[in-house]
Image (cartoon, rainbow, N blue to C red; front, side):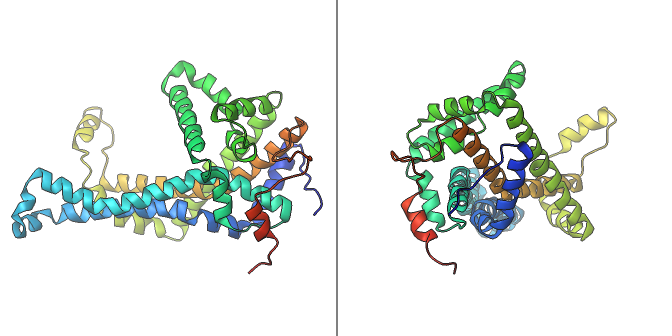
Length: 324
């Protein structure tokens, strides 16, 4: 196959990323189904199960006196929520793995024009799970420190741009340590800060704001939003808001109602789902940008001693097969 040429222009990279995303939309979306919907169903299972249990607790205590103790109620609530929480944690882990696996999938799409064998792409990350977890811990620590102290906000925002390629480095440069991923990303972005920031700003505005807003507008247009508000209002009524409303009443501010909480839950849920489902688009663009910067830097991704490109053998094997 001819070498996949990526433009070094910001809009060129974004356009190429969008084309790859649209071309392989079915595969990328299928890959994200469990990581996204698994989290949604898991947390819904835990909350709805706990809500039904608490709603019927008075009747259950009459039939089962043992449930009258606090420890018994807590134990039952945990047992009811446990399957949903387990499902949520498994999906959450798969979502974290997707930050690297999607990069491998994009490399496969660029090299072969096809995306095959999801487990093989996940294995590119999971076979180094320990270092991957350490990378996430370091990134979470960086995010926590930079966001918790006001004076670090600007510094943290600047370094966030420099560290935006850490998962691409981890995926394509297997010899890099967790700490080395941060250093390598910083060196790649160094001298390309403005372009990297521009890509980040456009991607962020599009996938974190405009696309969620568009879906919320569609929900309102097809009259789905009122149905969801009504379905959640019973659950929202369980949230203790009396103290907050007392404060708002003193300040002569509008009081919060269960309907307001339902609207917030629906808005946040729809936005979160859209943002998670568009992770492939962001990963594709950052993989393309990594490719541009690493090859300009003289260290192309995944090279052998002979200087040729290298893909995971399982991915290449599956790529040779015809589409189902």
